Structures are given as C-alpha cells and as structure tokens.
Image (cartoon, rainbow, N blue to C red; front, side, top):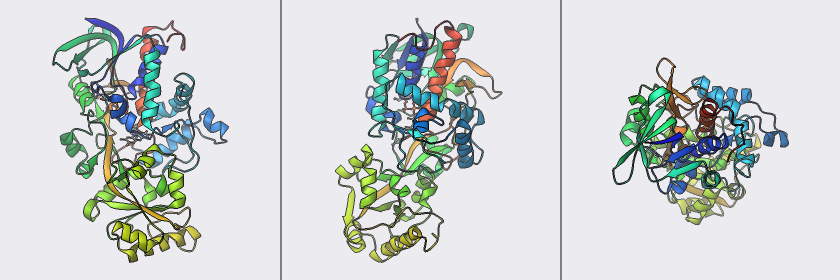
Length: 461
Ligand SMILES: Cc1cc2nc3c(=O)[nH]c(=O)nc-3n(C[C@H](O)[C@H](O)[C@H](O)COP(=O)(O)OP(=O)(O)OC[C@H]3O[C@@H](n4cnc5c(N)ncnc54)[C@H](O)[C@@H]3O)c2cc1C
C-alpha cells in the first residue's frame, strides 16, 4: 500500500490545502476525477471573490473591517442559521488566507471597491485581475506544480475513505479502467464539492430550484456526502444552495449582478419588475424561476455596461452577442420583444427612485437613472452549487452527530456544511470560495500540527 501524509480528493479549493500542507512539510497526494479540472470545476468557473475580513488590502484602502463585522453580516443574511463554529473559524482565517494567497501562492490580489455586494457591509471580497476563477485556480495549480511534496493523480476518483489503524485513513481510489487502489494516509480531505450534479439529491433537498439550469461542475455528484455518511458523519444545511438569477440565456455565462447593484433592473416577459433585485442574486434565482416562463431580462444602460467590463464573464456575454441595445426604450423593446409601455414605465419609475422623487414599490434603492443607450440581456435562473454538507469543526475535521471528530477525516468547500444557513437567501458573495479555500487551508494546518510539529511554517516547498 502507498503511504502519504495527506490525500486530498478534489483539485478545486482543495489545492489551497495541498499548497499549505506542502508548505508545512507534509507529503500530499491530490486525486482528481476530472482531467480537465482547471476549466471544469466550480472554483475555475467562479468569479474568484474571496472574503478576507480585516485584511491588509482593506487597511490600505482605508476600509475598517474585522472578523466580528463579517460574522454580524453572516448572521444578518442567514437570520442566525449559519453554522456558528464554521462561520467563526472562517471569519477568523479569511484575512490570513487572502494574504497567504498573495504572499505564498503569488496571486496579485485586488480588492474591488467600485460596487457593493448584497449583504456585505463593507467591501471585503478580494479577487484577481479579470475576476475569474480560472485565473485563481491556475495560481494554485502552479504553486502545486512547483512543490516537490505534492503529486496529482488525475483522472482518478476517491470512492471510499474507511478508517485505518491508529486514527489514520485509507483512501480508496478508482482509476478510469475500473481498477481500485488503496492509499494509506494520516488523513483524507474530502474536497469534492457538493451534489449539484446529482438531480435526485437536488430534487430531494432543493426542490425549489430543481428545474432550473445547473451551471456547475458535472463532477459535483455528492461523493463526499456518500463517503462521509457511510462512516458516521453528521450532515447539515443540505437545503442550502447558491442560485444565480442572471445566467445569460444565450451565452450560458454569468451576467454579473454588478449590473443590478449599479442600477439595472430585472423584468419578466411582460416588461414588469417583480421584486427587489438588490436582496441578492442567489435567492432571486428562485424568484425568477417562479415567474411565468421562468426567465426574464436584465435591463441596464451604457454607464453600467462600462462598469461591468472588468468581468471576464461579462465580456464573454458581450462576445456571444447576447446584449440587445436601443437608443430609446422603444428601440430596446423592439430589440427584445418586450412590451414598450410597461418597460418605459418601469425605467421611469426607477429614475424617480434614483432622483429621490419616489420610493420604490419593492423597497430598493437605485444608484442612477438609466439613460440612453439602453441594453438588455435575456436571463435564466441557475443552480450554481449546493452549500450544505458534512458537519465539520473549526479545524475542518468531519464530526459525527455527537460532535466528535472522525479520526483522520476532513472536509472543505461544497463537501462541508457551509456558512449560508438554509435555502438560497443566506448566501453572501464569497460563501463558496471561503469555505473551499479556507477549510482546506485550516485542514492542512491541523494535519501538519499533529504530524510534523517541528516543521516551521514556510520552511518547505
Ligand atoms: C459561475 C459560478 C460563479 C461563482 N462565483 C463565486 C465567487 O465569486 N465567490 C465564491 O465564493 N463562490 C463562487 N461560486 C461558488 C464556488 O465556485 C464554489 O463554492 C467553490 O468553488 C467550491 O469549491 P470546491 O473545492 O468545493 O469544489 P470544486 O472547485 O468544484 O472542486 C471539486 C473537485 O473535486 C473533483 N471531484 C469530485 N468528486 C471527486 C471524487 N470522488 N474523487 C476525486 N475528485 C473528485 C471535481 O472534479 C472537482 O475538480 C461560483 C460558482 C459558479 C458556478
């Protein structure tokens, strides 16, 4: 039997764990089911927004933030239903994580301050140029490739992780030809994401979004859930998910919600708005799905178009020809097939809200009136990923129903219980990547402290 310190199943956020574990002196084997993971997993598809409350990047921008403030925002968005242990652990490690991504992984971390994400009381989501997960994952995979302590086995699927002797684990992996191999490890980290690609599990736990388009990794099949529960793991918040109300129907790429936050509106096929879009893009997915036809249009203008161009995804939406344009509202109506009268009324009503002349009937605020040229993109609601999973403690150790850790078993990202509470409304931007990178980072630290206490952080690569 092969032996390593740490087996990490999943090369998304799990690569942060691999890099950190190697830095701390552990020998790591990453097993990854998808040979094209750099372009196929959720981390690679994401907008690369990672919260780091209290980071030095915020301090440099004059933004006062802290783990306590972030926790208060999580508490408010989830109405106190987020896992308190995981939320605290991630709030406390967020700033260290983004600074480590900059200093150790070499990411050119940026702190966008040009717009607000729903629910964050200060700008705190950090990103990389282009604001795309494929770039973020590339930095992590380059760090892994540069490390002599990490091997990557792909394609290869983790199928089980039974206990080994003396608190260790055995990673049972399956190769593409169906042969199985057992690898003895001090610990196994389940970083295989959630169950968004398993329609049956989605229908069982997330019926409100089960008919929406699934826009996540096809390898998010619930493997961690099956493996963990088979060995006594407790689960939590399996009804939690991140939806998104603004997937371009034509480009099948994300139209950033930044458009809404700068004053854009979402209308249905009758040209009418149907709610306060600024509550959050995640919960608005089910709201949009419930409208007649289950789709709508994002309406915005030239000013917002310019602001959105910092997002690679938005540039892709433009290049796909998904943006309709009109010099007047009547022209936009003709270009989209939306009825001109209601559309004009909605745009005028929002302009009145922006000027402070009227209150919005749904309660939103508006940055500025929409002016010519007008744009619109047809949008469909989507399920991006599930947020619930295996219960873990503050070190990312998988725990049983009594809260006792299962020896040598860790979980991160979509495999673990997240910090979004229940349903879609608890999702704050960054609640996907922070548990993905943060729990993997914490798991690596915990395994290293137990295994090689003499190795100083940063000593080995
Ligand atoms: C379009 C989009 C935009 C998003 N934007 C953001 C954002 O800006 N900020 C944010 O916080 N979150 C965002 N999210 C959510 C975020 O991407 C995910 O929450 C996060 O990437 C999950 O990381 P992960 O490591 O758990 O999963 P993944 O990145 O999906 O990695 C899991 C890996 O495990 C592999 N795998 C699966 N099963 C097995 C197995 N049995 N054995 C071996 N390997 C296996 C998969 O192939 C995959 O490579 C977004 C999601 C989408 C879809």
